[in-house]
Length: 133
Image (cartoon, rainbow, N blue to C red; front, side, top):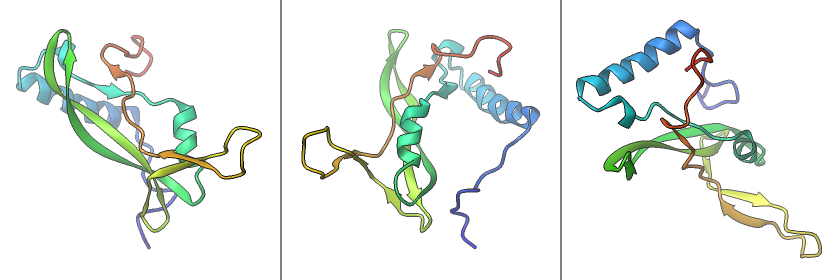
């Protein structure tokens, strides 16, 4: 049985999630990267995620780890980012999103890239204290 399925992955406890995130943050401290310059997370809205998941044949989302030079707090850094793309049951990536064209136009779908990136980073867009950060 393929690992590519709509049930792939597992939900983890708050304790295990804290261990995962803590190990990452500790590594950044060891590298002497200031906390204000350490990307902890990237947010993606449900509308965009749903557009990926609602594509015909999509069973999940593949997450690519990436890096790009960006300015943070006035200094340029190689910033960790992610790129998300829908995947079908064969493991093939769904690289284009089909969208219905506006009313009054031909019934041909408009097509645009299905690869999602550039979500707001934390910091500065972080959880409130005590809300699971």
